[in-house]
Length: 189
View (cartoon, rainbow, N blue to C red):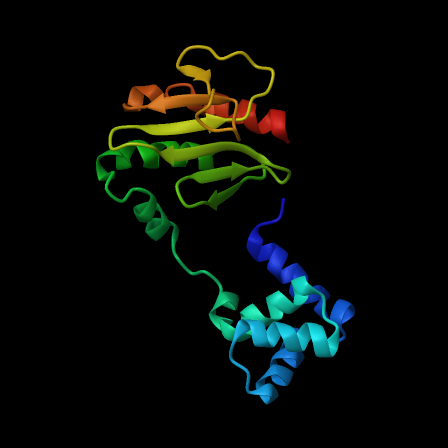
């Protein structure tokens, strides 16, 4: 599944074919109108030029907020700090688990979300790392059809995107994690 940034880039790439103009051409045209409100821009794009709602919305949003096109430059350290804000005591657990995520054998993407890190194969998410409380990190695994054992439990209602969970409150709780992560990767690739 594409990220929102990838979807936006696809929409911008398809714009000339679908609307007859590139994003830059639309922005140049909108500059001549002197309009500054989203609704007014939408009305012009849809009414005067027949642009579909989705493309008109994208053109207007990016015209009014060009910073949305700027690449996100936050470093992983900054993103990790944001996830761990107020939970600094579990940083060693989080960092050790994250290093294990990065050591999975295969094509893996770490995707930062608001409250966790998603671990993805080229096809889909197979694990997640979430600093849940001030004393615990939770690791979610997508292992359909595999029985939980040891410190690996059924995720239950904790997170609908995974089937299993490991609660990590001490470094010993990470024993065996690498094998479980690899098993989750292999079963979702």
